[in-house]
Amino acid sequence: APAGAVAADDEKAELLRRFGDWHDPVRAIIGSVGPGQVLRHDVYQLTDPLPSFHQGRTALVGDSAHAMAPTLGQGGNQAIEDAVVLAHHLPPDRDPEEGLAAYSAARLPRTTAIVRKAAQASRLMQLSGGPAVAVRNGLIATVGRLGPGLALRAFDGIADWHPPQRTYAAGTKGGHRTRPW
Image (cartoon, rainbow, N blue to C red; front, top):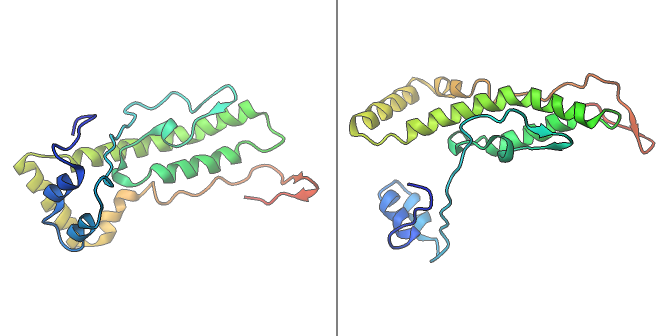
């Protein structure tokens, strides 16, 4: 729907129109929602990556840095990865601006690739023409029959992420030895 769109009558009725003929328990779940409890929010995404996720001593993480379509379920995951990488590049004895630049350099390629994959999946899910939808649904069904491993290959490069390895000596903080990553 276009930005700012609302249902003609109410959002619960709209959900029932769209999903009321789906399998159990979809209709029951929608039916259990009280009046006024269905919220509709516009979804925004960045189509072009930012040139950097930091400026000076300020960093962006998560959706503020790389808002993406929700089709891959990666928004929150990428925010957590951002936090891990940011912490990795900001040890107590390092210049913060240098660490922030390293954070941006480390995260931009990965998040840009995932934003693009999410946008591709979004375009595929939003197909509306009869023949295109039939082809899409047929391909998805075929992939599902060939094995879940084939479908999961779409997450190669996403779900196999590992946190960065510490490349500096462990230090102390407050008299206690800090833990290595």
